[in-house]
Amino acid sequence: MKTTEETTKAGGGDVRLTGISKTYGDFTAVHPLDLTVPEGSFFALLGASGCGKTTTLRMIAGLEEPTAGTVHLGDQDVTALPPYKRPVNTVFQSYALFPHLDIYENVAFGLRRRGIKSVKKQVEEMLELVQLGEQARKKPHQLSGGQQQRVAVARALINHPKVLLLDEPLGALDLKLRRQMQLELKRIQTEVGITFVHVTHDQEEAMTMADCVAVMNAGRVEQLGTPADLYENPRTTFVANFLGTSNFIEAEVDSTSGDDIVLKAGGGKLVLHRARASVPAATGGKILAGVRPEKISLTHADDAGEIPEGRNRITGRITESSFIGVSTQFVVDSPVCSDFEVYVQNIDRDPRLAPGAEVVLHWNPAHTFGLDAAQDIDAGVETVEEEVA
Ligand SMILES: Nc1ncnc2c1ncn2[C@@H]1O[C@H](COP(=O)(O)OP(=O)(O)OP(=O)(O)O)[C@@H](O)[C@H]1O
Ligand SMILES: [Mg+2]
Image (cartoon, rainbow, N blue to C red; front, side):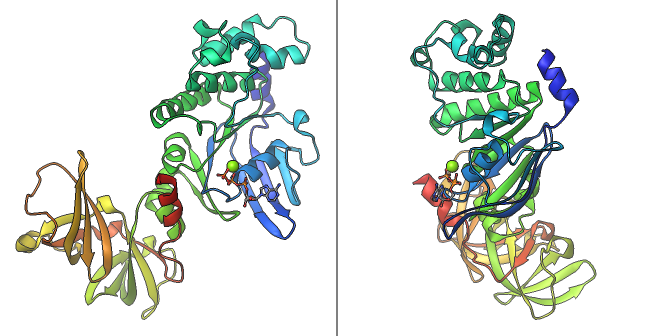
């Protein structure tokens, strides 16, 4: 495909936002934001409803005029360019296919509009890419939601944008189809190699698809990183709670020794590695010690003597247990946290681990992360629950 080669040679697929912001009256939808999306990456903007994802995306597309700041695509400042002059295409949640045109003509549309006569080869290639070659002569209403979605992607890609913007493109699909389409979109992105900027409020979706995720909260990017980095090293409670589940212990710095910070919490001691503390630790200062539920082991109190030395440990009592096949999810009441979540893989199940049982929770100190204590422990929690409800 000649145009694709030209695009690749010309570069320009990286998106650079500099000090970009958007206000509506006295409401700030996007606070001044600096963000670079590397060329050829699958980038996700993740955040709860109303945090400014669509506004950010629309500013990249040129559909929304920024209040301040600039948008660069490669070396080109496109801030003043209208949408149709930007090498960018957008796929929306409502893919808005032309109902009276068949799939082939829907995909061919962008080429025909530009006056290109021989569209056959390119349309066939695109249909092949999204695996709809067989469906070319059907009308949109004769396709499933996921197939229609792929037509929308093909229709956008045939214009050879340097950047494809996707705004909750899978939002209308049921969960199973969503999961399939996530893998499908990822495959398409790898195959065409252009930059994808994908907006979603679904953390699992962002984590499965993206090379890099920007977590947005109230008009700001709270943290940027690879999915694994964000999950393992959250720097705020919002990120720690929005991506998966975290347990937090309000602790006081007891002492520091070498690379270890010794914390006091509920009469016991916990160790936090200095490299995992995102705030400086001074003796007597407060810190939030976080640990993910799957890093914790549960041992019945009668067997506490068998727990190896050197692990962080906390005593508690099981209040809830739910068997979900691969694992059992426990809620444990302890002096340092009333609803500690612990996920135990179902290898050899201990039948004594049931509600009411006295237990010891223990984990490798390396799995503790330390956050600034001056923030809301539950930031990002409610929004996730709302999505589930
Ligand atoms: N034209 C507008 N006038 C006034 N306020 C607006 C306008 N467009 C968006 N907003 C506000 O800006 C904020 C960000 O909106 P945006 O559409 O970017 O959110 P979002 O993160 O895409 O949310 P969702 O996940 O619900 O799509 C919201 O509070 C919204 O109400
Ligand atoms: Mg939106």
